[in-house]
Length: 461
Image (cartoon, rainbow, N blue to C red):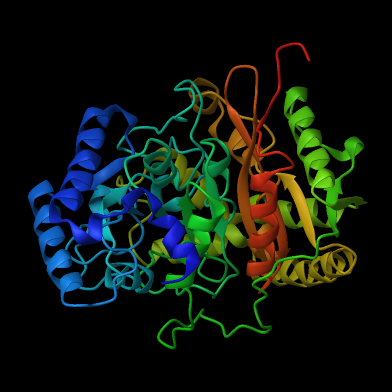
C-alpha cells in the first residue's frame, strides 16, 4: 500500500480487521446523507442494505489476503459517469439509462475496495459552473446556503465537504472540478487530459473533458489519482505520458506565476483580491518567488471557451444523445446549446488557429515558472443572483478556470482563506500537461503552510 493510500485510510483504521467497524462507518455515512437531503447533492442513493452486504463481501475478501487498499472507503460519483447498475441521468431524467459496466475510473476504485454510495447532482449535462442548473434542485455551498456551491460537479463537492463520503469523482471541462472545491473548502484535482480514462463518461466537450477528484487533503487526492490513472486503449482520448512523473515536486526554492494586481478581476468584490494576495504571500513564505505574468493569453483562451465555437462541440456531443429542442432540457441548458448555431466551420478553424498561438504564448510563460497560481474563482455569487442572471454570472465564475483544458494544463485547487461572511475562497495551481505530480507536491506544501495555520480575512481589514 502506498503512503498516500495509507494516509487516506487514516480515519478508517481497524476497519479491515473488523466487519462491525466497517458496517458502522457505512451506516454513519447513510445517516448523514438522509439527515441532509435538503443539500440536494444526491440524485441516486444506493440502497443501504446493498452497501452493507458489499461490506461483508469485502471484509471476507480481505481476510483471505486480497489486497484492497481502499477497503471500506465510501465515495460518490458525479451522475455523468457510469456506475454499473445505477442510473446515469446527467441531471436530465428523460436521458436516464442504466449501464451494464462502470466507467474505467470507477472500476479501478471498486477493484481497490472502495464502496460507491451513489450518483451526485450536477448542472444538467455538465453545462454550467454554478450548481443551480438541475431539475433535482440547486446545490448551495456547505459554508453558506445563500451561495452557490459551484458546478458543474456541485453534488460531488458538497457530498465530500458535508462529510457524506471520503472522496468523490467529478468531471472538468472548463472548471467543474475546481470551482466547487474552492467554494466548499476542499481539494479538487484536475488531471492532465488523458491521464485518467474518460471511458464511461457522458460527453460534454470530448476533446477536453477529464475525470476529476474531490477530497479533503492533497494527499488524499494523490492516493485516488494513483489508482485511477493509466492509459486506456479503449478510450480514444487517453494519452501516454510524455514525461516521467516527479514524486518529489518542485525544489525548496521555486518560482510561481501570479496575476498582477492591476489585472486581478474580482467583479466588484475586492476582498477576494485580498485573499489572493494573502495566498501569494503564503507561497513566498514556503520558498516561492513570485513572478508577475501576462495574464492576457490565459484570459483570451478562456474567452474562446465561453464565447467561442467550443460550444458547438458541446452541442454536437449532447445532440448525439438527446434531442436538444425537446422539452427535456432546462431552458438555460437549451439557451447555451442553441448559441452553437452562430458559429461556422470557418469560425471554428479560426479559433483553433488562435488557440495554438495562445498555447505557444503560455508555453513561453511556463518556461520561466514552476506553476501559475490563480484564484479558483473571482468571487462567490448567491443563488438569487445566479437565478437572475444565469448566463453572465456563470461565465464570470469561469474567468480563472475556462482556459486550463484548452491550454492543456493540469491543476490542483486548494483551500486558501475565508471571506468575512464565512465563504471559503480557494486558489488553483496550474502547470503544463504531465506535471501533475510536481504540482501536487507544491500544493501539499501550500496546504501545510508556513505554520499550518489558515488565513482568515477579518471584517474591515
